Amino acid sequence: MSVQKLKLISLIGPVERFDDIAKCCLTSECFQPIRATKLTTGVKHLIPFETGNPYSELLEEIISVMDLAGIPKEQVQITDYDPDIDRQSARIDAFSARLSSLTEKISEIEKEISENEYSIKQLQPLIELDVEFDRLFSMQYVDVRFGKMPLTSYNNMIFFDSDTALSFVPLNSDKEYIWGIVLTPASQKAKADAVLSSLYFERIYISDKIHHTPQTSLQQLQSKNKELKAQLSELIKSRSDMTTLNQSDLVKAYSKYSFLSKCHDLRQFAMKSSSEFYLSGWIPERALPKFKKYISDDEDPKEVKFETPPTRIKNPWGIRFFEMFTEMYGLPGYNELDPTFLVALTYTIFFGIMFGDLGQGLVLMLGGILAWKLKKMKLGRIIAVIGLSSAVCGLFYGSIFGNEEIISGFSVLHGSNTLFILLFAAGFGVVLIGVAMILNIINGIRQHDPHKFLFSPNGICGFVFFFGNIIAALLTFLTEIRIYSAVYIILTTVLPLLLIFLGTPLTKLILRKEGAFKEKWGEYITENLFELFEVMLSFLSNVISYVRIGAFAVSHAGMMLVVTSMAAMLGGAGEIAVLIFGNIFVICLEGLIVGIQCLRLQFYEFFSRFYAGDGQPFKPFS
Image (cartoon, rainbow, N blue to C red):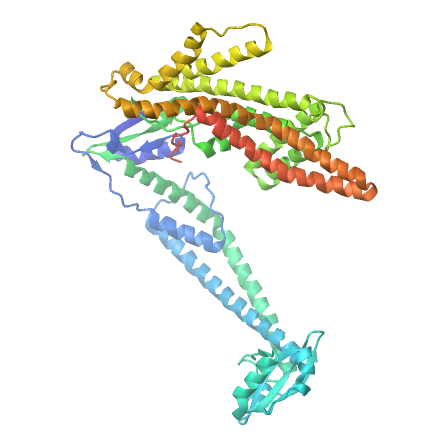
């Protein structure tokens, strides 16, 4: 649970040294700038730097050319590169012009090949026609069109009652369609269209470029495409060779001008006078000594006090991937504990208890590893961990793909075990509520908030009320010890609830704020009585909510019992099929539901008691 300590520093130095300092800030990759205006209020004769970026236009041109050439935009270390913008711009323009010309020619040839291939596809069914298209389409009094219709329509043409002079000459056919030529008097063209439409005739439009017979035109098009593809291959090779030749320079130019442009962007955070610049930002405390190595003694950073630092969390590798759950709720505030370790621990335990099966757990673990390694899914690592937890709990339950006869274990559905696991879940919930209260008290102390650690339902008063009554109740029901008395009730129930009730004015009194007891007491009493009732109800509902951990364990065991029972009833191949598909169904459906329920317990039952998650992320200039 690590929220890294940050320092707010200010850098002051000669204006002519600003670009060098900006490069140092960028190279260090640990400096998050803030607007200098926040810290220089009241300082006279300060003006902002000019905002125009001299590198942005060239950088945009480089990115455009790299996109056109298909060159990946990667950063490389630059030790020697000509920074002259005009010279580099001329080189980029020349390369862009050559590349655009080649790309345009390639697009034109690809388009012509595509059109020719479409025409070839049109001509193939008409190959039997031994008449030139120019002769057919030059007839003045006869309208000619090519197309296809369903075989059923062609077979029904003899029954078609029409006064339209129309002739269909078949040329080719397959199982569904027949291709042919339609001849009709030009004067009856409109009527012919209506008849053909009723016959589901689909017209084929012959390209204006085709003049000879279908067979001759087909040969010409195929020969032309062969020539075009040879030209296309040469052009693609030329473009590839030119790209390869210039790739290194383009990547260097992109890296160099990205760096310079980013450095120049730092000016928007700084202010300057006639001789000095002022720049401020956050930096991790541990990185400060290393950062000082990047700058000279003249610009030695000075620490500044500020109210709301950003948050940078850092956890060991084994639990780091659970940070995605923490961030879903919100980053911890700077003076707030990072709950990622507890999320990793409790989420893993919750899932294992609720979905305990050795075989299914190992399947989940394998699936998570594959998703992580092959698809680079962040969630895959979490699935692998909770799958292992499921397998361990399944070993304890004695369940392998729902079969509890292979190894002996704690059968969830056996005898009084069901009641035990439900009570265990409730006890687990009580412990976690206590942990959440302790964390809330620690957060309140760190944030100097008396109401949070003293008078809130999750502070010291709430802790005394909750556990005072839990302990007394357990002793009463499980032993012969009776500690309930008037004094005990006053100390563990009446006094804590009264302090929670008066929390707001008491906090103002401790912090010496005005108006501690100037509340509108009618409204205050009514509102806080309802809130107090809600507090007591929330303790009960939270404990009951944790019972779902045991309930889902019972539900999982019951569902697998149904699967194994159905499989046993079928026997043979049916048994194997039911076992396979039943396990797949349970892994997918119940695994998803349990995963969501575990997250719900984290957010609504655990986090809500101590965690605000209102931190702002630390985003270093990089």
